[in-house]
Image (tube, rainbow, N blue to C red; front, side, top):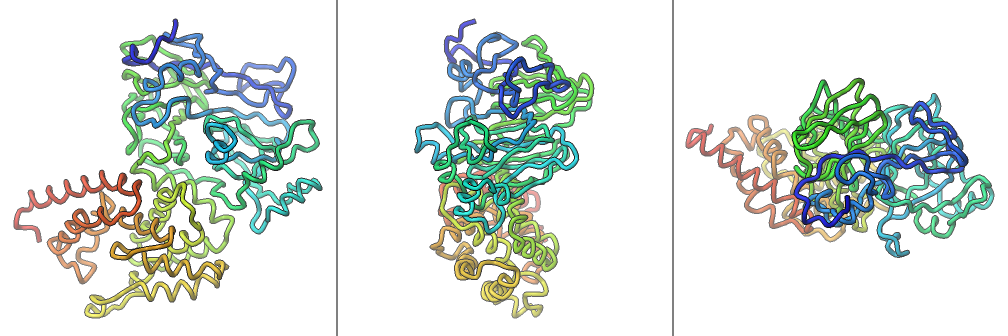
Length: 546
């Protein structure tokens, strides 16, 4: 069937995509039992599941390539939230029988500089791993670009690589600019921006082109790369949720409706891919023929898909992959940032010390969650800005030390006039150097802490980012919870009536203090939610709110 244009398409049913088997010198000759495929000549290294050349296997466009479908019907596939046409994600399965080259991918800015549409940020989900399997992910602390150059020249680059042990179920984030390599011993599901742009640094003597100058230009000595801790929710496990993609593992007991596949805080309509990591499934709907999802197969669910049901045909391990759009707000952005950035602290031991100290110092204990949320939201807001992540991290985690019981005055009268900022600054200057924090960055941390509150006028980028994030934390459901929990345990708020003015001031004055456009976009739904809650409380309680 010819693709005549997107205007004639009102809806598009889910469809299965045929895999494309790509030969690579480091690949495997026999993919069984993962795929019924034996290499005829060159070993197979990658199985592309959503490449532009992959063929549509089912439905009205069977036989067309995925690239053709995206070029003619992007809105039907992607939905209104998409800021750009074209396929956003490339999903692969990697079969490494030898070490891959040590390589790096450029970010969007560098890719565009050299005439490419986008860079390449990716993640790996380990479908299987042998004991002791490893990948290289980032550079060791202290490695310089000169050391990288020397390692390329004398063959010792591996000594500078940060090695991670891989086990089945692990998720590893590899943001653009991260020096990395996959070693034999694991089978990886790779989710990435739809780009095959790779700069090889070192290739173990294989006669392939190297891209040393561009790889060095693309390299960042510190990145957010590393293992990601999954977030287990009641209806799904979020494996990773970062600026370009979200990957979820969704349990299916018997069957599940298409409406139940949507995650809270995400657009109700948007492109999704369903991958069967194990077992098989069938998608059935009233308006289309059933679509079978075989083991290690993938089905595209367009934004304009009709309703359907996913039926477990036995042993189904369902992975759902959706694109995210940098710059398009999502109120789950804090979780993406936290999951993605969490592992950076493994490369800098002082961060572990900060977290351990704050965890022990936080009193009441429920205040602890504010720090990781704040830092993660701040990193999300800071995407594309020039800022020092060490400074932002230290300030975000230390900024409220002076409000904790045991650090603030116990006397109610003193507490009324207590300014926690000078105390916090003094303690941060005392503690951070003990833990190995760079001394030359202490002044910046102090400035950020001193100007992080709504009434302040920050100048540093780190302070602007943190202040906006802290304002957002005072809005929405989290803002209401943080205010209401003070009742009865903070001497300033003995009753619920006494805390209501705090909520009113939040919706009336805080949004106007936000400095960044993406912060204001995130604030809108939070303000509406808080306004609705205030109105409901006052309507139900009348004049009898104690």
